[in-house]
Image 1: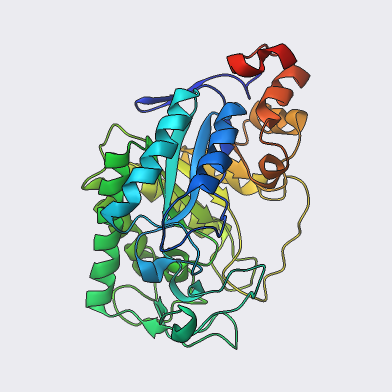
Image 2: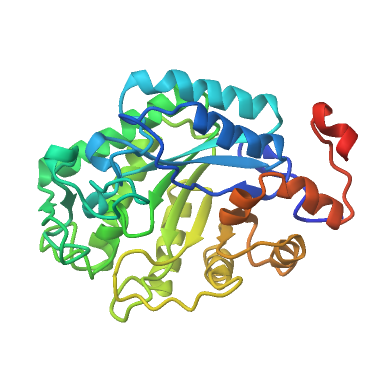
Length: 353
């Protein structure tokens, strides 16, 4: 029996297989609203048979967007279209998840394929925030170091966004603490040079994430799965590293987090990433083994046998896929055939099975 196509229960949710549609920014929203692009994009992955489908990073506030065209969940008006999408995903046998995010200093960007740079207020941009006034790119606007009130606002924004996600009907919430965005900026000593209770020691640098998780849990039911995505290493000497990620994951498990979605990088321009198939799997494996928590593996996993082997070797519990599912939304249906598993197809497509 294929592990990739075996069900897994995480709290009150059962995924029919271990294939997860990883959050992928579509840069297709106006004022944070989902639209028919998102319905077709996410809906087709449900038709394609993925077990769990997670939205792209949904900003918890307007200033939390990566770009001026990011998805959002900072106001009640965003809920209607998201509910349409969630209902379609569930009607087609998949589970819906949402990634809640704040970009911090890596915010206020233009549409990436038109102008991959930050924009000013005249073009719809805004002042960015961060744990410390340190830019990501030399040409970026200087971020504003968050004060106590600013930190409280971000936590409140995550809580309010979580409440909306619950009302929409999402079954899984993922807190985005990776890829150099705001929470990751607090974790890494490269971007966090604070001297208060949020900076310096490991315990201080993880404080903001733990407080965000606690704010989410104030409204997210304890029986519902809660994921956290982290970058397990900055790929830079002196930055956030694997050992800290393992230690953090142990604490997150104690706090009620169910899955560590294990990515890497994104915080520092000088990062040196040895990109190759499975290049991030070893971090998911280390966290799974050392922290005794469920993990998701991501990063250049593109083939059915490859994904199956990761699970067979007990290196992870879920396979998060991004670009391969952009190329082929029906990968799960085809992978099942390759692995000799008979899975159900949508009745509308059965004649092509």
